[in-house]
Length: 118
Image 1 (cartoon, rainbow, N blue to C red):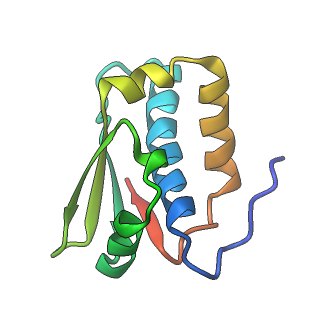
Image 2 (image 1 turned 180 degrees about the horizontal axis):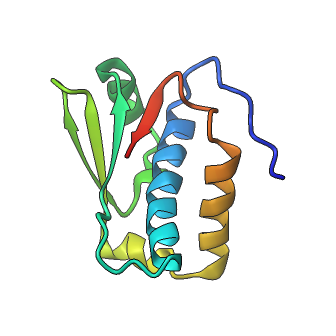
Image 3 (image 1 turned 180 degrees about the vertical axis):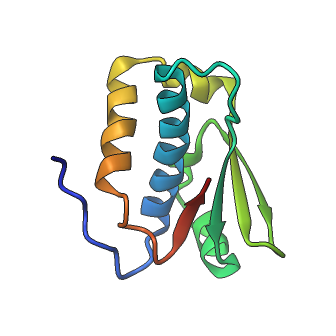
């Protein structure tokens, strides 16, 4: 069984960016592996405005390459939509495996700061 990482106590913009990337990738990979052809590729997250602004102001934005982000301040919902570049990147078996491992390892790690919505 994978080692689930312990909850993070301090906000880290780069780790939250990575979480968004890997959860979006996991959504893609798990649906494709299940044979789903008609699924919502965009993934929604609940994140407070303050955390969202810190994440977007962070000098490094590399984990978000290939994702179009939109944020609704009123509902505090972030939507991450993968671009064609992102979709192609996760056709690689190694990248697909990494997305699955990160999903399993980080099930509760970032819950204090961001939650993936179903």
